Length: 295
Ligand SMILES: Nc1ncnc2c1ncn2[C@@H]1O[C@H](COP(=O)(O)OP(=O)(O)OP(=O)(O)O)[C@@H](O)[C@H]1O
Ligand SMILES: [Mg+2]
Image (tube, rainbow, N blue to C red; front, side, top):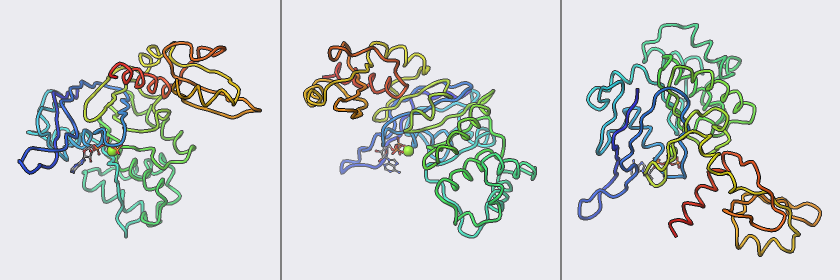
């Protein structure tokens, strides 16, 4: 359905006219249906990749095909079927939430006005529909942005950090919304909060410094981390020496001891037990293993 072939995006030029920042570097990726979690550090290239898929930016090299058609040459085909929430989504100062939705509905050619109300309910903003959107909290603006992205009932939903700033209750609501939407559609979602995609992502795409370093199921990541994540309880006095040797994922002080979660390729200390890793721990363990390999 969506195919990226060696897609690169370079920004700026240095004194010799050579393009400088390699925001995205030769990313090849085939995506069908489901919820794909796009994960990577700050500056990894997630937003740039999403902007190219949303046809707001052209690749410097490579091709993006949607149902076989090149989206750079024919952007309209994907635009009609796309919902996009940019990372820096803003609202217009004078419009209420309802007017804002009506405005975008008109731009997108959506005439079903009952849908606007349903979407505002879906993101839990129906009680606030007549308030100026500019007066909303950050999380509420984000929710309006999510509603806006769903207006045209998209087949591809590209959401850039949709859960940033959402409180736990809204985050849960949003997760459920996405897994319901995921049937028969492609949802591409970027996040730093791995636990946000842990329960809903059918695939993970992991970026580092512009490159795609992994595309696999969360299960595969978890399987690989077996035997790499440990739980241990050590006397406080031993902690300083231990953390010099191993990667501590989590530390909690309790009655003179430290309760630890540790990423290490073998038994990190006497008495440690092999632990069931969370997805976040598994990804950290994977990163440390790669770093150790590279060193
Ligand atoms: N318009 C631009 N001009 C120049 N450099 C840019 C531009 N947009 C992005 N970059 C650079 O490209 C790289 C990738 O940025 P991008 O925003 O895609 O990362 P990201 O993974 O979305 O990061 P974050 O997690 O902080 O949102 C960064 O080094 C960034 O500074
Ligand atoms: Mg970003």
